[in-house]
Length: 357
Image (cartoon, rainbow, N blue to C red):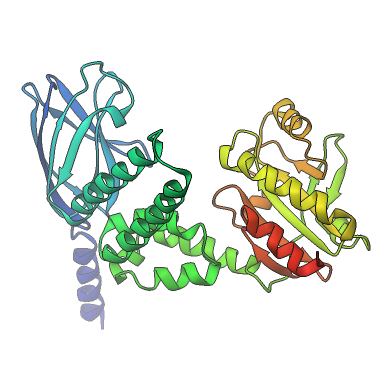
């Protein structure tokens, strides 16, 4: 028995000493680089290695635990390239901007050689072309709407084509914003088993589980936050007000351009249907009280407003699994969520459908 126990223990120790993770090789040449670059992990900001590159060329062999995003950073803090660390031979070709701008978008670099890096480069090229056309003064509003749809389709097809590599993982949150909690879980299930174990999808899965609690058909979660006078205004008090048949919980911020772009639609709907039982409970992700209240006043936003003045570090954001703003939830008098993320004219149409013209 003792001999057997010893052998099992020894086996366990040997197993525990086996190296984990994967190996990768990073090589490249960046024209204009003449000293060295640090390979920095994007999330932790840990420096994984310092790569000498006196003539712009560099080579490094490393090991890492799981796929991750990283960057090559110069001594002056300038980002020379962004890449994905994953098994295989990663290649970087690039050229430093003559102005040595700290904005890496102005530096040409091309990662390749592994699935995630090849996919990222293809996606970047396609999205850059769409963005350039969108910003062109000659582009019509109708074409811009089409470009927005094309961009969303590009994201969807890119995720679908890269469910077995880390680029698909990193792109998934962009698609998840418009999905329900269950839809996110269904999408995660389509990734390879290895990718499902990544920290990013594990965290997204936890968010999706929370988001399921605020899917259409679920009961609302109460919010307790202060208004401009410092008085607590609960969401429950608004929903249970007999005058209110439908309440829109609107997550926004004065610094959020798309949020402010929604204000005219919110005002139109509020002005038309408030007397019929439509109320708005605005939850601001501002952290500056003066800017929050100035936006409310200057834009004539005459509905209920509350905030913790802590940006996304907001309890309601956690309870409703808000991943981006603007975001909203329409709740009926019985406390059931009947719609979510109603943007533009869709909000007016939905409230008109519920309350009549």
